[in-house]
Amino acid sequence: MSSKPDPDSATPAPALAPAKSYSSRLFRPKRTALPRDDARRQGDISSLAYLTMGGRDAAVAFLNAENPALGGRPLALATASAEGYARVAAAIRAWSPDPAAG
Image (tube, rainbow, N blue to C red; front, top):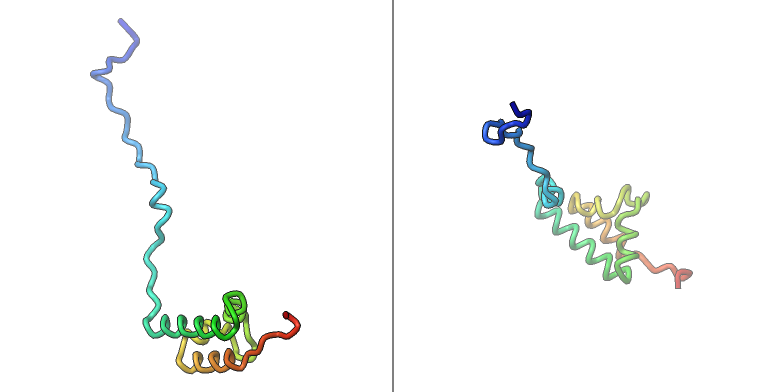
């Protein structure tokens, strides 16, 4: 007798789990969308800072830095409420460029 298994009578190999595709790593779980009013305030305060402060870098630095006078990060405060938006907008309008920065 031959020691070779008969290919016709051999049991099939167990199926392997499908490999995760590259595209499945590109998608993240669905997140809750920012409420419409919050998104509007966030966009408005970002635009105001950009136009008033002379560009993206200064606006982003101001909006994302902790501000003790305002009691938090300006972007978070302005996004959270109309009162916060008014306080941050007033601070942006009162802002003047640092003369030493030239």
